[in-house]
Image (cartoon, rainbow, N blue to C red):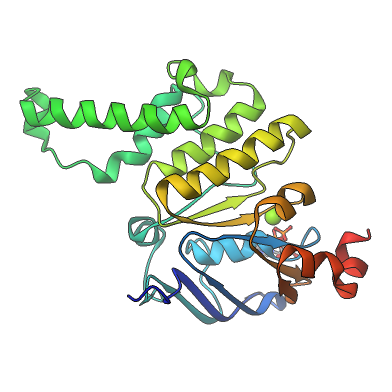
Length: 256
Ligand SMILES: Nc1ncnc2c1ncn2[C@@H]1O[C@H](COP(=O)(O)OP(=O)(O)O)[C@@H](O)[C@H]1O
Ligand SMILES: [Mg+2]
């Protein structure tokens, strides 16, 4: 893969549910290190695009190329192993487990000790466990959750649960992180902090981020490029300045 190859390339993507076309002719390129925004009114098809990118839904039309590889035959698990991780619009955590265990579960597919190693607590197991612990704490630290590592996830305040969702997704060491309305329900100060965390994560782990968000301050503040969806169709794409000045976007979305 050359430097110019996008991490993600989507061509003419579409999906029908029964007779209803939810998304059609959707095109997108995301390059390494970019933060790209996906915005649009409720019901526009944003989450459906994420569900196709992660193979929760099988697209009816079009292609998804990830790291230069056609993903047509890949499953949800394959996509995660290949390097796509996501968060959900409605928080999905293991709410009965501790904060750190939620992150460690995300790291599971990276561990290479055998059951024998684990049962007898052989050096390989102990060394790997120490590494897993250290890595999990590093991620929790970024999201200001390190001192709550042993707290049961379900007992965290709402904003912290949203941050833990991102931490858990990052534990799989993705190349592309998909965030579905990460600032939903957060107050302005929490949103501000989240913005700098997302930027830090992009710089520190050198990954690409595709972000669905309604908070325009967040979107315009951290995205290098933005795509606007409306009724399942692309309405516009461009820089934040171009999007904010686009009459069609203002009419359909920003002006509402
Ligand atoms: N599994 C499904 N079955 C039928 N319709 C669906 C399904 N998933 C999404 N849709 C429809 O697709 C459209 C886009 O939904 P969604 O992607 O959730 O919008 P957004 O995230 O932009 O608010 C909506 O009309 C929704 O009802
Ligand atoms: Mg949605």
